Image (cartoon, rainbow, N blue to C red):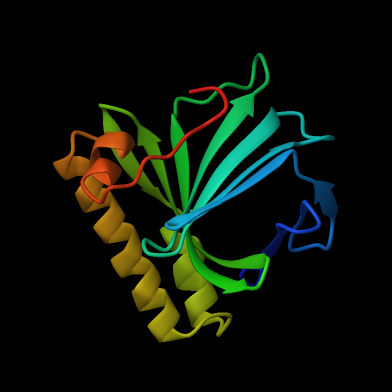
Amino acid sequence: MHPPKVERFDVTAKINVDNKGIVRAVDEYRVEPFGLYMARPTPGRKNFSYLESWLLPEFGLRISDFHFTPGHERDQDFYLDVVQIGVDGGTWTTRDLYLDLVLRTGKAVTLMDTEELMAATTQGLISEQDAAWAVRTATAAATALAAHGYDLRRWLATRHITLTWRRR
């Protein structure tokens, strides 16, 4: 079991630093009142070639659109990570709390990695309070998506949020 993954998004330097300290150049950052958009290539990845993500602090979510390479496509439109988000000047930080949601627009949302959350909590890698927050956050997102026909745009429009993407 691994500790929560912490990732940095340095808007000023236009870099993204993953939990292993690997620094990646970012093509675009965009700061909006409701969150941060990032678009960057994913060199060395076999399954996908490009990544677009929105960090939404109000919702505790990182919403990603992976540009899958031929032969590695997945039956998903968006991948939602449950994350704690901090902002310090031009640097945003996420702490991934294991739970993920896979959204198939208009069809379904699937909760993933509950066993990882339980193991991390049992092993003391995260507190019971953080685990409970992660469950509440994932449940709220899944419930809202279901109430809006599993449509991310419809749900966020009710909160006056419009996410823009390079390829959508």
